[in-house]
Amino acid sequence: MRINIVAGNWKMNTTVSEGVKLVSEIVEKSKDLSNVKLIVAPPFTHIYSVCEKLKGTEIGLSAQNCASEEKGAYTGEVSAEMLANLCVKYAIIGHSERREYYKECSEILLKKTKLALANSISPVFCVGENLNEREENRHFEVVRKQIEEVVFNINENDFEKIIIAYEPVWAIGTGKTATSEQAQEIHAFIRKVLSEKFGKKAENTSILYGGSCKPSNAKEIFAQPDVDGGLIGGASLNADDFIAIAKSF
Ligand code: PEP
Image (cartoon, rainbow, N blue to C red; front, side):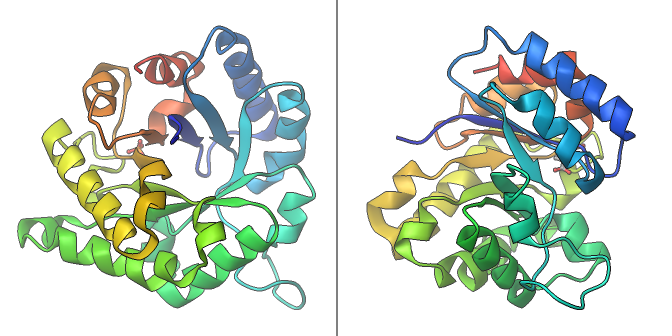
């Protein structure tokens, strides 16, 4: 059975004390939530303090990234093992901002994915086309390639731990959202591509939508049969909005 997930990607926002306040509010306001798994992805510097606040709750802790190497002379990097040691259970891998600004290609993303999995961290693997690719009607081809180059290279057992986030780049932080029909169309396509390699297991994969998701549009998007929740950027920085999105199921 696949689960509904609402994950908040805080990106490079909040100081540690602001982050602790935010997560405390989320813990408080999510007490009556059912039918949805909440995940928060604060910056690395907040992981320890946020972990303390999440103890005894069902809310999952995610990193926004992890290193592509296991350990050693990689100045500035944070390894999957270090994160696992701090009760991190998820890591966002392949976010379009990492692909674009830090030139992370599939080869690197596959290494990160494998290291996360080897450390019992579930990757939230992001795929999505940019505006040009959508306008040229190449979004299916682009998303298929992103999946084939990474997800098709992990084994069946590990595949069960993967969460996919479909995030059209043209909708991230722009206020533009994919229509619910566009979201359903490509989520169903993603599930079909996954099933070509992993068969029926693809039915159990949670596929999240990301891109200017907010309380006012979440209900319609989440109502689509192949949309299993959201990866939320801007709106996850406000506890009321984040919880309102989670209550949209
Ligand atoms: C994101 O960056 O993952 C995202 C979906 O951002 P926003 O919700 O701000 O568009």
